Length: 139
Image 1 (cartoon, rainbow, N blue to C red):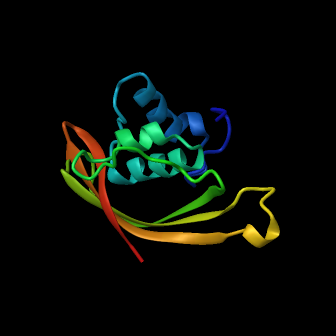
Image 2: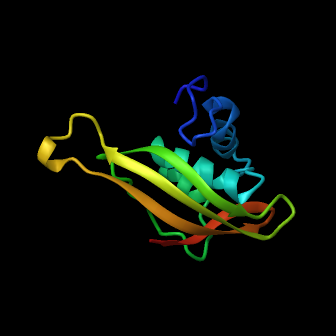
């Protein structure tokens, strides 16, 4: 993703100054560096939007992380609404309630098109100084 493009996470900031800095730090072996559960959730949403499975797996708690992750390339994640969040830079646990919107990628045949929203309350835990996604309850 171009660092000068608006970040998919919905802050209005450009990718390079927003979630891109966390993705870049991870790629350099510096961990995710997200300071709060909300920042990590935004960076994870963006990872879904740009199909970065490695970042998603790396920011997943080791006790709940799947062995592998296949992203659905037929979906485009295009909007994130943060409904509530808890946990700050000095906490060890936090939550983020969000709504993530998706639709079929352009060019999908009309009879196969989908559109929807995933509503989730996610739990996060700080491990070794880094926030990690633990699990979530969807509704």
